Image 1 (tube, rainbow, N blue to C red):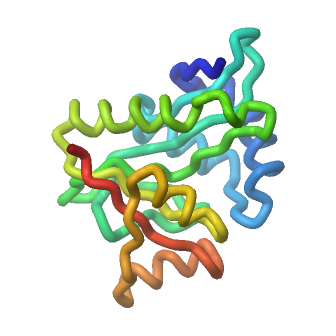
Image 2: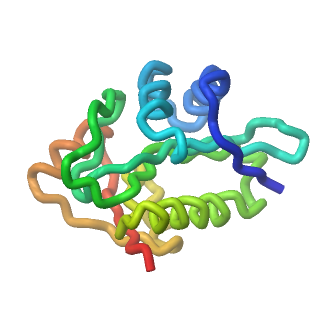
Length: 166
């Protein structure tokens, strides 16, 4: 069983280790992880087993639909027209899969979005993952030039996706 708990600064070294294993083609520096945690601590979670073994994490934060943050860049200030909860980085080690972690995590994020009166969850699906996220209720967005410029920081084959919060 996966348990989601709030992330703390002391988790970041282990988060970076998991990120380097699961997302080697999408590297981010530990300073960027620290920036995301400071920017929106309520949206940052750690996945653990019942034995307190860290098996994953998520970074999410208030943002503006259609303008995902650039990869490996500090967030700065919240956009003036923030209207979504952006799921920036989601990672679960293989040993954690099949235990309901993503479903529970999405429920937590939808509740956080509702609490903040936000209309959408957004994410950038990395190469090969768009179908997975579509099955979770996200829809791909055809990028305009501004969105494409932002997606280019992630490399080829990524898809910007949106889920309306009911």
